[in-house]
Image 1: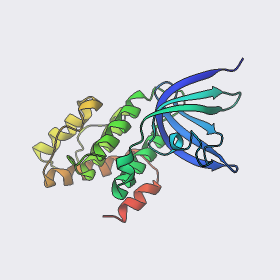
Image 2: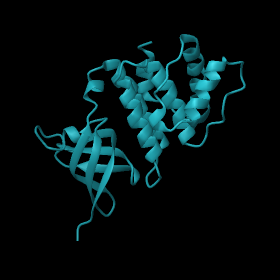
Image 3: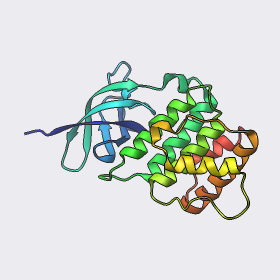
Image 4: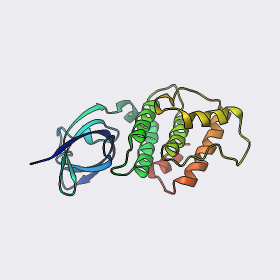
Length: 216
């Protein structure tokens, strides 16, 4: 008897397989990060084509094989179409996907990371916050979610508003993260802290980050 599971998640990566298929990596609420094959997803008009694009968020039906999953159906609730129309925003978004892919594992409880990723992409789609601030919040909160955040660094004296922002990011639920703005000076300090901790805790070269650097 064939076994199927339904998972809620987001497409982190996709790559071509064979002539018409795709291999995707999905960050899911139920199973952590999983890989799955989507047969025919590269054929024009195939119902899985859009569902296997980067950023696609929704419910995926997976067939459980002996050594792998196969996507058989999907119901997408958010394609983040506005983000895909914004080249700079999309570059930030792809960087967020890379960080999530680096941090997450199969069969781990990755619900908080999935929520953080989703809310951060939503924040990129609005004009209320600068992309640079969204990035700082995302990077710092990702370290918090992973249990590595050591608190305010002691390498220099920070503005009181910067210390408050760092503490707020660390303590607030994901749903309330993107509810504040900061001055340019505070943003510079937050950027420094985020960079400091990303260098310390994530020893990895992100391809999308190299693209972002060319846009500054």
